[in-house]
Image (cartoon, rainbow, N blue to C red; front, side):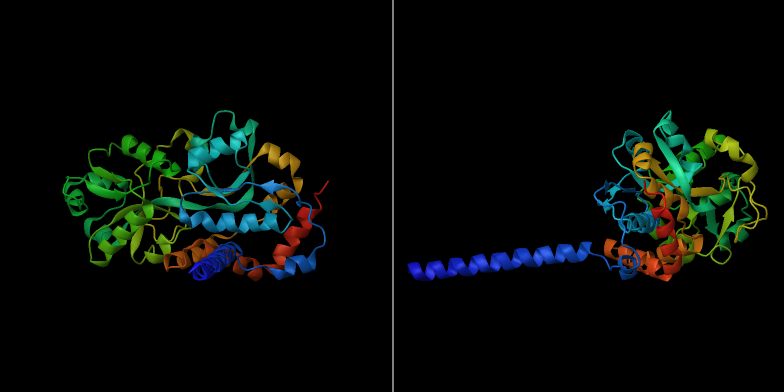
Length: 362
């Protein structure tokens, strides 16, 4: 009996060890995204070696790809890049100001300007341009109902027949898929509600954005009217195409937030595909998508700073990756694979960026 017990114990221990190794292997597999072999073949110097970096990333999944690509750029310089911290907009800017994180690739300016701490520029900087004047934002409405109710501006939602058509919950107000608390756009939309006296006419839906948009798409597919805020690059403008499914509407006159006042001349925008009119005053200026980093990190790591200044990702490429996420490739391993594919597709440019960044090594 004792021998049988010992045998069973041994079997359990072996199975336990096997399970541990299997789980470790799975964890490693999930973390070890597809490698880019040409980097090690191309370079024999890695100036970031021995230095750890703490990236952050946004809470909106359309920006996840930028963290993956920019973190990979640092890894290819030899840095030990830790797992990202997922932070809301105001928490990130406080964190990078205090040095709790080193950078993120999800800065939208001027949208985020009102959410940075006082004296922010004393300890943190915006570096380079991921996509310049590419961040388009505004309000979209189902095209069929824009035409049916002659909707051109936000203020058209004061009209009783429009409110009734877009009132899905029976509260007497038009329902607008807005931004969750903590997002930069939440403040701007709130400003619009006050500046254009819309509080009594529009109900802001501030639940999780992806869920709210999924619900709006489902309603659109049954022929119901929809009204939502979005930005581009974003998968929503691939799923609901401006000009075909939905139209961008504007505001009747420009009433900027404090942070928008320096950009008033850019708040009348020409050439927006799918706009109800051209030019359009969408209520938001185009945004620069930029890296934001802690100054001490940049000072100690001029190679990283140089890389941030060199790198960029096009509007169309971000949109294309976002569309893949919407179609189901939305796990972190998918995002990392997308980053690998993007790097491989831009091999020549990637090598140039890596070479130029290395020249900044002290």
